[in-house]
Length: 284
Ligand SMILES: [Fe+2]
Ligand SMILES: [Fe+2]
Image (cartoon, rainbow, N blue to C red; front, side, top):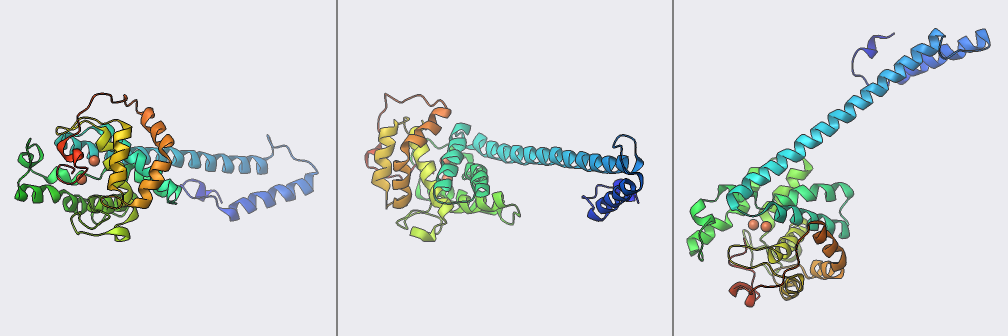
């Protein structure tokens, strides 16, 4: 009767019933029971204790797997960043803003947790872009721009065939995060709601945080300037519904920013690109 206790089997209700029946008939026979001495009681306590231990072991195993999974994703993101020279703060904030917007647009709790990591992987495909193109200080030639654009498909190829929900989301994001609401984006020139919602969310989060971040071609802009650019790009680059939701929730967005201690930007020059409020070109 005890053989199942040697393996890591789940709670066996037949076994449980057996112990309870034994205790019930023993109680009937003796009139009273002592949980610390009667064999029937001790067997049940031992059974439950072992199952509790199994549950605790599984919890620890689950935590370890989750940590290993999270760390693997973050290390993969770091590998791409290392090559791209963009900051880890940027990808973390893109994850955070995207998850925030995902919650507002009705994604499940599980998806929102996944999107933190999936969004952080948006530029994973840059791993496959040559340094000559990636680090070129000036404007890219047309063929170089084509190479740069291929980071979307490279990212999707890296993530293709993944079984986990988070990597499947990451694949959608990597492929579609440069599509534009007006259809002028890449790689497929999708427009409007043909672009997966999660990719439209990440495009917004990525654009917003890129505006607040210093890059080799631009200063970091203050929130007010970033907001003006988002308004100007609403319905062009960005999903207008998402932009208005984002701007309505700006107080919460700013709270998320302060979590990261972003110092308020005072001195800046608008880059040529942003003077024209055109996020094409240098924004990869
Ligand atoms: Fe980015
Ligand atoms: Fe990108």
